[in-house]
Length: 376
Image 1 (cartoon, helix red, strand yellow):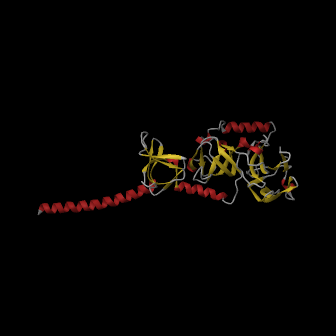
Image 2 (spheres, helix red, strand yellow):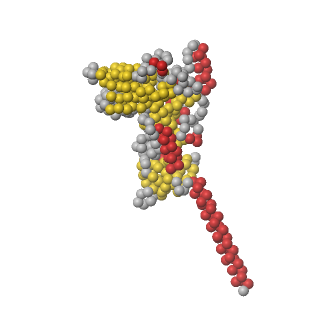
Image 3 (cartoon, rainbow, N blue to C red):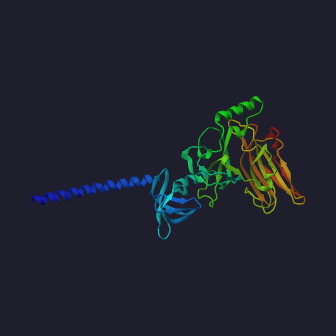
């Protein structure tokens, strides 16, 4: 009888401990799942990547996945300072294995990029570019490690929707490999230029950041910010030769029968373009720099087989993008925002039309009010 009571007591204790342990284990697993995001989804951002048997160097490949494919995240680990996700593919076999984090973007991060894209959902691209080196796509125009979305490969192409001039500062970052001067030496250069009577230069005082729109063939993430020193503008080859050293092209749109475009390369036929330009002089008002300070319209004479300037600002303006192009055929309008002398920003509409064989432009009647200094 005594032995029976002991056994019964042990059984009851075992059941109590088991129930408590299960409750604790369930809670721990729930907490763990929340930490690593076991319910998360990842999208492949690399052109192709391998799901592997483990995160070890000698691991075998299980399945190749391609850009845009969805994976279920079931675990994660950091191995030798590299983040890996344990994922389950959505193939017939439900292949499960490990993939390096740089090849995918989680649903949470993807949603952040989509929110950035909402900033320009009603705007047209202003320019086009490509990366001259691997660079981080970011949520905001600064070097903070917290706003990195993921790394884009060298040569990645994109449309430019907007840009910002950010005062230079000395911040070490993998995106910043092209910086060679310290903040102090840059300030010394600016001070020396002032002593010689020169104004401050835009590229000495600021770094430029581009807000870009990504094509799905390049990235499932639709938008983000790129550090300007890693970006090469893809100016269409038919107009790039008309750019001067002291006045750079910052935005362009096609103005004739072909669809308005910012893409690079030669079109099927030469066409007419509206181009926004920017000098290298600092001209901030209340700490804000204009996106552009010059406007020109280049037209192609099919009989002479050459370009001519149909219209250009005779003096500098102070303007911001986006530029909007509307209309059909050779009858187009383009609209930009210009700063009124009293300080307000106003939409100004320019009419482009064909008069016999020549393209002409009718600017706003009061355009002279907005021009204040001859372009250099």
